[in-house]
Structures are given as C-alpha cells and as structure tokens.
Length: 194
Image (cartoon, rainbow, N blue to C red; front, side, top):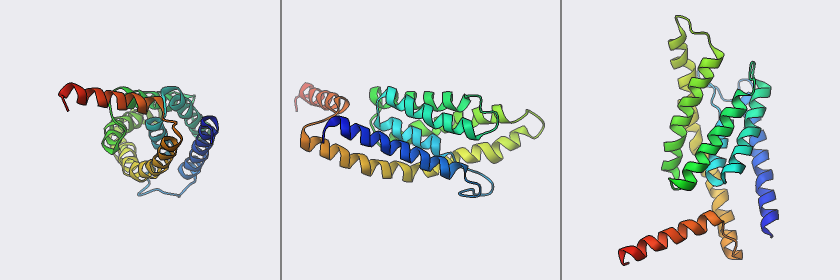
C-alpha cells in the first residue's frame, strides 16, 4: 500500500475516532460519575498529536474544537483555539523534547488538562462566593476523571500505531521523525564508544 493511501486511511480513522468521542462526550448520562463528565475529545487530540506532526495535530485539534464549540453554550471558538494549541504544543514537545511513551503522555496531559479546566471555569462560571468550590467540585474533578480515561485511549492507539509502524518497516517506509531519532540514537552510542 502506498504512503498516500496509508496516510488517508489513518486520517479517516482519526475522523471516525473524533466523531465517536464527540458522541460519547455529548450524549447525556453516558459516562458521568457524580455529575462529573470527562473530555474524551480533548484527550483524543493529545493522543493524536503524540503520533502526528505539528500541522496535522493542529488541524485535528481544530476539528475537535469546532465540534465542541458547536455543542456548548457560548463556545465562541474558544475550544477550537484551545484544542488546536494543545495539539500543536503536544506534537512539538514529542518531536523536539520528549519520547513518545506513556510517561510523556502523563507529563503532557496533566498540565494541559489542568489548563483546560481553568479555561473552562473562567469562561463558563461567574466569580461569586462559591466559585472556588464549584471549580474543585466539577472542573478539577473533570480533569482528573479525564486523566484516568486517557490511559485506555492511549493504549488502544498505541496498539494501532505499532501495527502501522511494523508495516511501514516491512515496506521500507519509515517516517522521517523515526529516521531522525534512529540517527541521533546511533550517533550518541558512537560518541560513547559503544
């Protein structure tokens, strides 16, 4: 299968996953615990961004954010901007600084979920006497619930991508990012004398 067809099928899979996460997130009484809802669309943007380049991650973040803005009251494009920037930041961190593994996911998703909960709180609530209690009861609890939910999402995507990378290695099509990491890895061992 050519690289273009493989990329097209992968992107179609992302769109289907985003639509599924959208349905799960905005179906009433689907997955709440104590009135707290997770944000699977935001998590999906983070996981997709860990496996894609910055432009692709930004586009899928924008798509997921636009879907969220359509469904919430007073969206005004804030979710589209937030999800797009989160996808960009996550992709750049993985490409430049971190390795693509589970610890990196936790390192990236924890502050992003906390920032997302703060942005949600500041845009949706009025700062009255019980505002701090409201933040801890719903918005921060939603961030922690989402952090638990990111674990199965990541490992399902990891299984899919391992299969895809194995197939690319068999056909001699390895992403430039992986080639670059292998060259860096080889040069670091050669400098150490190993």
